[in-house]
Length: 138
Image (cartoon, rainbow, N blue to C red):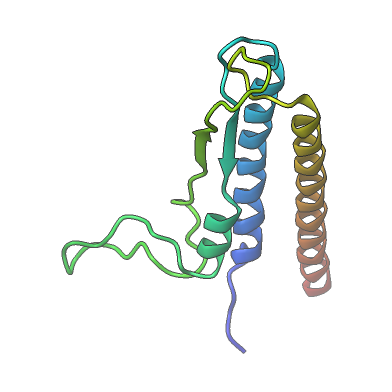
């Protein structure tokens, strides 16, 4: 039987997902706060693809440039996953240059909240499983 780390890739992935979801909440909140600001371009954040790639060991982080450097790549190395934050080009029909659609932001907010809560539930179940194993071995 091989020993597996207590905090495996699942926990690391959920931890990073919660962190990125929190950042996404800040971006959505900024969009909502600026819904009526002339010239404001909606900010958007994409991280799902990068997070999935990192969880599968396909992330791109710092490269080892010398044989004695520590390895950075490998499955479960989520420290280098970053969210891509960018502004969408303004295509406002109103004419004030603001491209925030409040209904879209509220939809994004709801989706982000649901996914955040799902990650919290999964993390809680993972810790409960660890707790059960510890209690059975004691």
